[in-house]
Length: 151
Image (tube, rainbow, N blue to C red; front, top):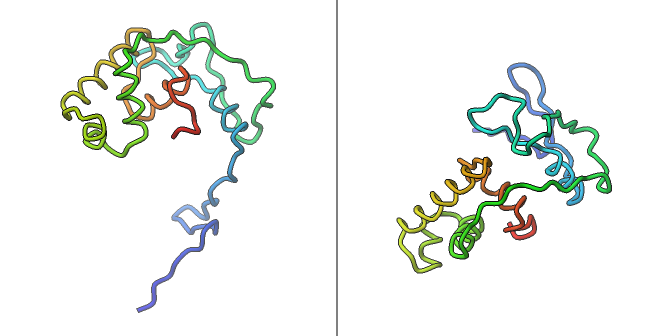
């Protein structure tokens, strides 16, 4: 029996034609510049209302990233997280699962879930909802709780 394998970065045949390979790897500065340009729409709000008040949404052009020098640092309203909530959030972002966080911090799984639920409530209270782990990663990076190098 012959098994055909596709090589990495080779175009893959799909129903509609050929699909492009993965994009070239970005430098750290380019990735940070793209992240700084993004605005996250708030849940339950019109498309023009963003996580940064007074800033309209603008499409990001993937082919032309903004120069690193022109990146504007935005000020986001930060929730008042306790030290233990920050510790649980950092551990959860660095580990694979909530049960691994519970074992490493010597707390129960229910306590981990409670801390994460309270973190999400506090972000919702300041108008920066974070219903998924990816959204919490973005919020933690924006607030300086973790850096990209830590992940």
